Structures are given as C-alpha cells and as structure tokens.
Image (tube, rainbow, N blue to C red; front, side, top):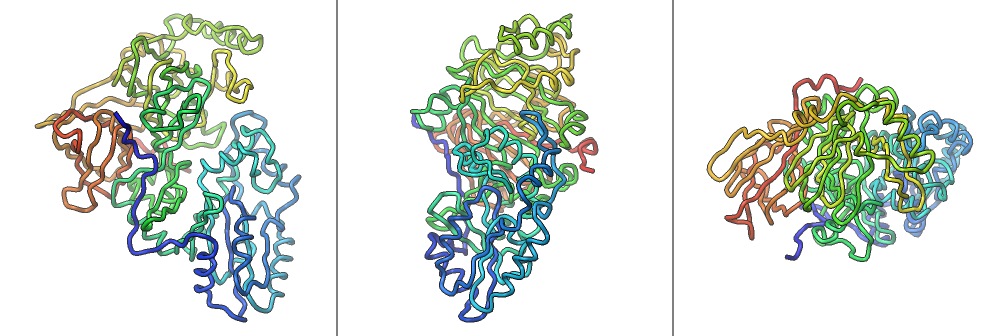
Length: 590
C-alpha cells in the first residue's frame, strides 16, 4: 500500500504574504524604509550557519545603498575565541558543558566602536549591517531583519564543509567537533540574542534553501506563531543513515531508496526540527524552537514552563534496525551527573515502543543476576583497547520483543535495541547524552571508530537493575485505566523516576482527550489515518497518518481523535506522552 506519511507538514497562515526572491525582497524592504537621500540603517542579524555572503550579494543591489558593513569585522581574534570557548568545548570527543557566554563576549568593543564610527560617517542612503552580531554593532537601526537557520540544516552544512563555528574558520574540522561546539556554545549564545531581539524584528528572512530566499513581516511571524499554539501541528521530520540502520523508514516515510539505510527519523525534536509556515503557495521555514521561545506557557503549560523554562522536554524519534544491526550498548546519565558534568538541568529517561518487530527481535535491557561489575568494565576496556570482542550476553539481559511492546529505560539502565525492529523512542530531550559502552567493533559511516564513553558510563550504571528487577519494573508495564464505547485507555509507563507519562488508546470510535494544561505529544501507532478535532470548533480538523507524530499545545485544551478515511470502522491506536506535574520541583532551573 502506498505510504501517506507527510514529510513536509505545513501550518497555514492567513492574512499575510511572503516575498520570494531577492528582487521581491529588495522591493519590500525599499518600500518599508521609503528612503531617497535620507540615511537609513538596515540591520540583518544572522543565526549561526547563515550564508551571509548570499544575503550581502542579494541585498547590496538595492537602490540607494550607501555602505555595506560586515559584523564579523568586529569579532575577537580567533585565538582569543578558541581560548574563551575551551572550558565549554573541553577535550571530551563528544561532550562539553553548557556555556554561560553571551554573543557580545565574542566581539571586541573597540572594533565595534570603529564600525559604529564608520556607519555614522555615512551621510545618506542605506547602510546595510549584516551578520551574526549585527544587532550589537548598531542597536538603533531603522529596520531590523532576522535571518534564521534550523539546526538540522546547519549540521548538513557542517558535513558539506561549507560553514565554520562561530567566530572561527574551521570549515574542514571534524563534524563531531563542529557539532559539539555548536551544541554547547554557538547555538546557546545565538538563541539568547534571538530571544532578546525577536519581538522587535520588522522582518524575518529564510535562506535555508540556497538561492530561494523568502521574507515575511514581523506581524506575519508573530501571527503565525500565535496561531500555531492554538491547534495540533507537526514539525518537519528529518532522517539520517547510520551504521546499524534499516529499511523500514524508506518505505513507510517514502525516503530515498538509493540510500543504503536510514537509522534515525526525528519527528519531534523541536530544537533541531523546522516549522513550515504556509503563505498561499509559498512555505517559509523556521526553527521550531522559535515557537517554544515565543509562547512557552501556551505551548508547554505553566507548570512545565516553570520546571524546564523555554525548552521542549519530550522527544519522539524512530530507530530503524529492520534489516540492519544492533544499536550500541549504552547507558544515559543520572540527573545529578548530567547537571554536574555537563550543565544540563534534566536527563534522558526514555522508552522503546516497538512499532514493528520481526520474529526473533530482541532488546538488551538491564544486567544479569550476580555479575561482577569490575569484570564487566574490564572486558569492555579490553575490547575497546585491543580490538577484541565483548560478550554482551554474559553480562546483559536479553529479552524477546514483539510489535506494540513497550520497554522503559530510566537513566542508568544498560540497554540496546537489537536488529530487525522499529522503535518509536519516547524520551526526555537531552538526546546527545548517550554513553556508548560497546559498539560491536564496527566503524561509523565515515570509516572511523565511533566514540566510546566508558568512563562516563561506568560512573552511572545502576548495577542493581538486574533481570528480576527489569522484569518487574520496566518491561510492558501495561495497566488498563479506562474504557468506553469504541475505545480503551492503557497506562504503559514510563518508570516512576521519569517525568514523562505515556498512555495508549485503542479505538474504533471517538476518543476524548484533554491537555489539562500540559503539552501532549502523540503518534498514530496503528491505523492508516485518524482525525483530530476540537469539540468546540476552536481549531480546524487535523488529519494524521500512520507513524506521524503530532503536538497538541497545552492551550488547546479539549480535543478528540477518531478513525478517518480508510481507517473508519477499523481499529486504530495512539501513544500519548505528557509531563507528569507531580514532583517537578526537582527539575526546576536555578
């Protein structure tokens, strides 16, 4: 059957337009400032990863240009920047520490003053100030434009060796280093500056697709984001191959069949996913984290916002090993450890929901009874250092799994999903904090060994989570909690130590839901198609398809889900995740 998975979901925006192409953008900006001989300063603040050269070339042809100023001329010397960021980047091959730096720390005050004097010396016409930090160079601009960039696109540009980290020229550095530096430093400082100036921006610029720039007004952006938190929506999923990847995502999500595999499918990671805003026939791409920044209470709910700040704490993604291999044997950090070592406020408790599983599929979960921890660590070290094998089954419990099983993985639990299954991973969001213990002796797609974090891992493994404990506490902890005509609700997890609750609904009729003031994240785990509706007509009906993840903002309140189209009269199911509001005090940011 042909897939109906929507890879480019759009949030329609009414009452506003979108200018496409540099000619139309120049005309829109020129009309907005209406300058002839009078001096106007147009500032284009840029997120990390934006091609400022394209913007400069596209806008410098605007009539009346008196000068073009590049903000990066005011940056500190690269050696100073490298020294400044080192405590946050560290020597660890994977992990750093969340920075306390601000964007202004990357700039030399004397150089900023010199640029300001240069701008002041222009007597008439338009002065363009472009780049990351442009709004620091000239805060009192006539027009403020923000050029944004989704993090996933930034990663692709890193891999293509076309961009560098903030303030340095390192486009040819290893991707792992560039990503780590961006995650712990660059994106943090750019996000802070973006949040500061976002309300004052007159226009927003989308240059995600090279050569196809788009511009919308500040009013259009704010109206679109305000509209998004009143209704269900999806972010734009992205997919990535891996050394253990499978073939299921290709078929279900209609991906490039020529690729060797797809390992990951990220369908709800707002820090890195995009939102597509629809203006008639045009779509405008923005980082979905902007919605979290601008409307955290309406999106997340007041209690969740108080605990986590403007961060989206729930992640849904796919792990496809159908026809592939085992994931790495791994463990996630405990809450105290991630706070002390990496500056993160919460950790990655997670679960594996099995969307598909072949006969013989399995998961490694928990440790065997009466193992010797020192012997396990020693064998892991020997396998890593001497290139030998590690006998995982001598130390780690192995469990058979089938479709719709749900296994829970609280932080500190050793685990690994095996070959020939498809996992819907439901977890807290600090997703890079995986301590690999063993990777079956294989290479990454780049032909190099994948980093092992055994030292971190041994510090957080909970050695008492053995076979009996695992069986009693974290495998298929299903409890029916309610039922009605045409539906049944089950509680499936997560572990009590996690802040995430999951509920599964089986239905042939209409299921009533309510956010109860907390953001809901759902996936259609069974059935071809379903429809999400507001009992009061507060939002337009929203159709979802098999395996699609969608978000229902806290402010949406009551909603229903029922089979639709080809699925009418047939069994469907959703899995829903939301934040438990009890005991959230332990996650509140200082």
